[in-house]
Image (cartoon, rainbow, N blue to C red; front, top):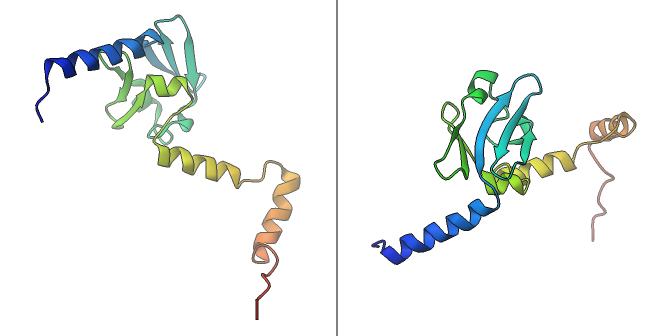
Length: 137
């Protein structure tokens, strides 16, 4: 498939439209706060804990500190981790692939949120889970 001049122009227009909503001017890891901090062209600053982002959760401070920004400002790359984030997606709270994000939501959804709920959940788990299912004859 050949790329035409028209294809290139359309891609440049899409990128320009995305950049109007903000693009990364700088990105850094704040060790003290344990946050990735992104400064956008709009003057907005976004920060999130690395444990919430795919590929960053288990990383050490030195690896988190080495962030490259794509020439368009729409992508962040951690070369030592081979991890990437798309800035427009980060602005929407999307910090990983669809599968990874779904797994995170599933993990959080199945966790008891308080000690009062956790103890009965553990006890129920020891007994084999919920009540036995009725068998149809």
